Image (cartoon, rainbow, N blue to C red; front, side, top):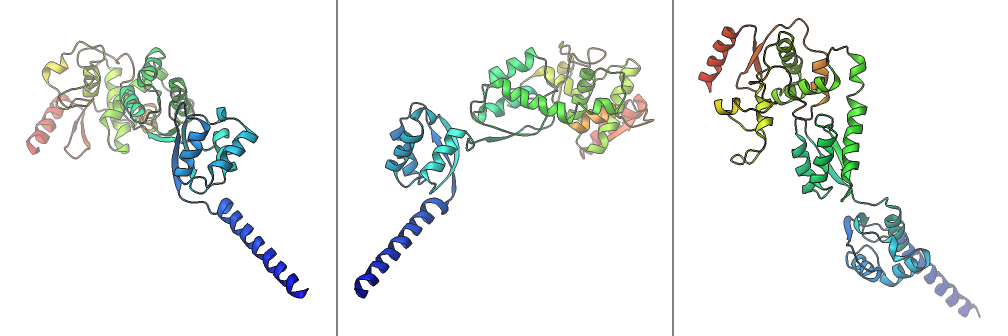
Length: 323
């Protein structure tokens, strides 16, 4: 009797240990992260098979049973999901159904990019239709309002949602500056000047000075003569395979685009790129008592400023000889 009882206890204990190991392996031993894709038109059986082959689940049968009891194959929406190896089937299903595990692509847009450059990156990451994106930007005249930042989007996000996210960041980060500083310029005019400053400046401490130069020229009715506005007007340069052509020629400076500030007085019709917070702030709060009207690159990324054209020419020739 005692021997039978002892054997029963051993068998019972072994069952408990086996069950505990099963629970540990099945529910608590989460493996490495992976991106799992459910393709359009895949059946529940095909998804279960793919999950099993990827090592996400241990049993196709159990996954399909849970799916049948708790939901339907319609809940397995096409898309990419952030999952882990060795996940419980219940967790996988809940994760996919809720959308909490939807894989988001990291997108970083840089200061000084024009909307076409943003569209290219959106297309490269399969985030949205670049043509639809540009159509919205142009119809709503949002060049300059697409705040440069890091965003997270799922694949095939509607273009309007991408645009709204970028404009929302602008409204959150940049818009408050207009209530902090007084200006005679409209918001669009500030962004237009800021976009030029963005393309000219490399160092933050120079932005208020460059902004002051352009504002000084505007004030006295002198043409801005800003190279970036010509680069914007020229568009994509196929020889260099890039926007923002380098080494502008005299022919380029005669371009008839209204964005060419060598040809036309005042500001161009709108921003030429999407400026940073710092560039917008520089226009709203330019270098005080700074009466320079010219600047030239000094071959180090910085600029040398001048009050008169003759002084400017001397410095221009000086740095040209040092190249």
